[in-house]
Image (cartoon, rainbow, N blue to C red; front, side, top):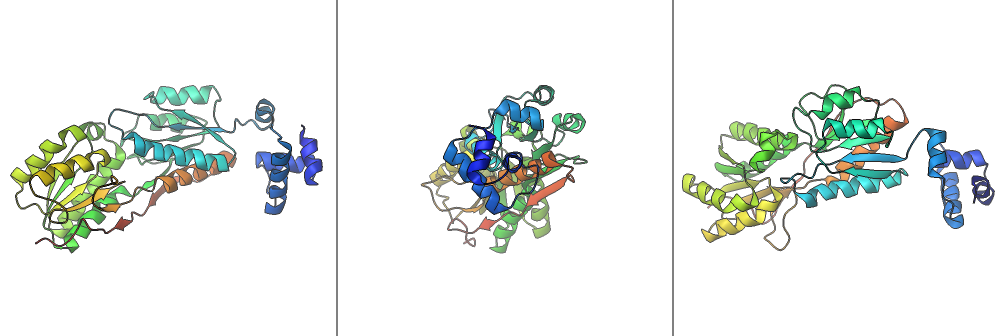
Length: 327
């Protein structure tokens, strides 16, 4: 099956079929649909090598998402699936890089002409990969925001606004003693951007509202100790913000042992909440929207010059049964 067979079946010229496949020229939606239907009906498969030589493209993008021990894999995979889904809509496949190779990994995929562009996750405030992204001739988008964003294209949830929204929600209900239980210590030690920004938003909002605030890093195996420490040091604690998906359940279980259950202890979660537990007030993690935005921005850069910049999605807090005014 050749491209001329597809053109004959669709009633268009071979060059039109080529433009539909490459995306190099704007084609009307009706013509594009007719060509796609003919491709599907005939089972036509473009020769990847020939297409790559002709267009100097691989029709593959890389997603760099290091799966460290402190990364919550189910959430990471939500981002991965969203990127893969969005990339397929642009006729691109995804090369998934899960090792913490840092700058060397980026140089490897760029030097081997393996991909048309790269999306980078797990971005640190002072990320060693950023200078490499600036020097490589490879379109890139970061899901995350480093301290220095000059010349970069970044997209993420506005985590600072998310941390602040949780404080304002609890303060509006009348809470004056609030604790923030965050990521594992290692996440803060390597200055992971989303974690730092959430804490910054929490601290600024707490100061603005005159709320007595406490911060604790946490991991699932330390949740019991964190809960006991907070109750011992803060007996007047009435509000809890949890930014640690796998620790939500263990924390709630630990507080329940001491008779502190929502909404007696008002709880707000940032990110997905465990199923089967109480309906928690939460700020959603829009992984699907972030992934789709990242792919769209990358395709713009692959197709031509694109203006760098930072896109932050506004957080959405949904109030549920786990928060109420303090008794």
